[in-house]
Image 1 (cartoon, rainbow, N blue to C red):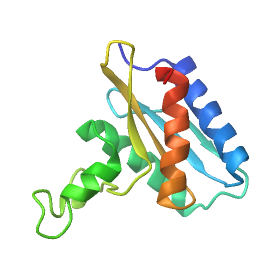
Image 2: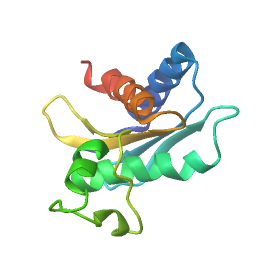
Image 3: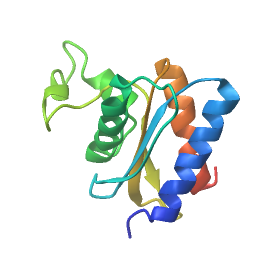
Length: 135
């Protein structure tokens, strides 16, 4: 079973609240198990360029079932996945995208966040998945 709309909206809401707590403006995307956009929020004043990045972070996390930052480590020059970011219509290989799992550990979707530092993006994405995974 993939992520439900209610779960995707809960992730968006939790991530949005984390943004408000941190004082940052973000674009937040949630995709389902097939990497299809399920829910999206663009906060007032968030960077327009980050809209596409947030969606690609979510898709990248789902395509490879790993945090985008981990993929970025493997895609550095000389790494085993160097240049992977040019595959699949363009990937994002820096932090801010995380897979979302159900209670049995099955990946049901992913969240992607963009609009601040990669550390902030990751923290906001983590808040989103915690709303679903209950961590």
